[in-house]
Image (tube, rainbow, N blue to C red; front, side, top):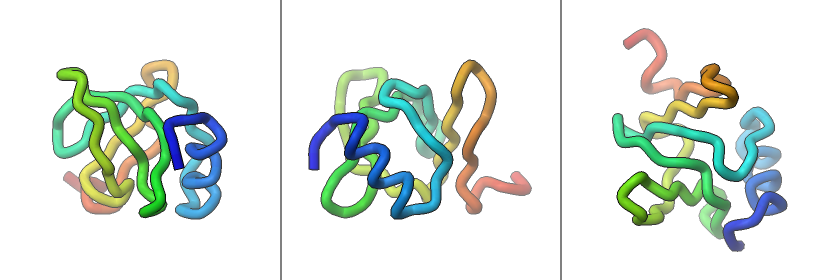
Length: 80
């Protein structure tokens, strides 16, 4: 898989995530980045603000925003 909207859509469908757009802002373990693509592990590729891209499981300390509104929070952060 690569860093395309189609791959993001496939991950969302597989993982039961809301519809995400490439470039949606997110935090992973408190670090800011953006949704950049999907990968063969059925995880999201996140491009962090320092330019690095990592494979990130959406159920690990992830919050995703659209238009400055939270649209997804991983279960491990709910209640914090």
